[in-house]
Length: 161
Image 1 (cartoon, helix red, strand yellow):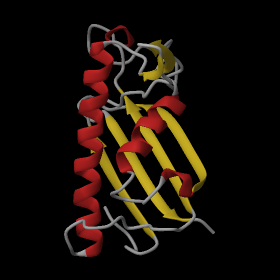
Image 2 (cartoon, rainbow, N blue to C red):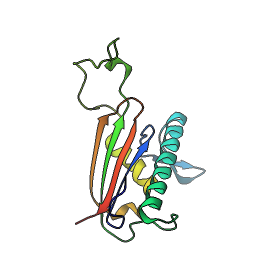
Image 3 (tube, one colour):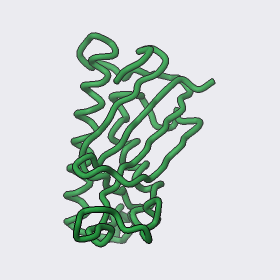
Image 4 (tube, one colour):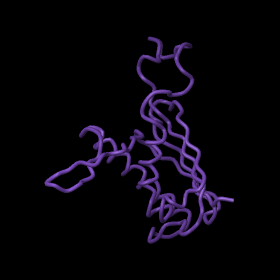
């Protein structure tokens, strides 16, 4: 879904949202090097999420602008970003009949951190939807439970007022 191509874009990404960790500096061969945090499993999940976000963003921008993506939609513009992450429910949330137990939390309150999910997603959008994530002047992030098979995110980027 795309609205007012020059002022706002909204689209959905299907996939498993993955966080981008902080990383750390280590001395390797006497030189300081950035070492990303996380395991190989986390790196694979992040790569998969990055690809899903980029593909959805490219498709949305092409529809909004009626052209191939050659430059980001928002360049040198203050923007507002809203991302609702749709997280998979654990199997333990369901009764044997497939209904949701009344005792489960209303919202995902465990890891991954919403800020780390947002970091990974913002990085994937850079160069496609906006030219630099430093342009984000206002942001709203949330984690919600997904319907089965609808894990991912709903992303809106718009010119900040």
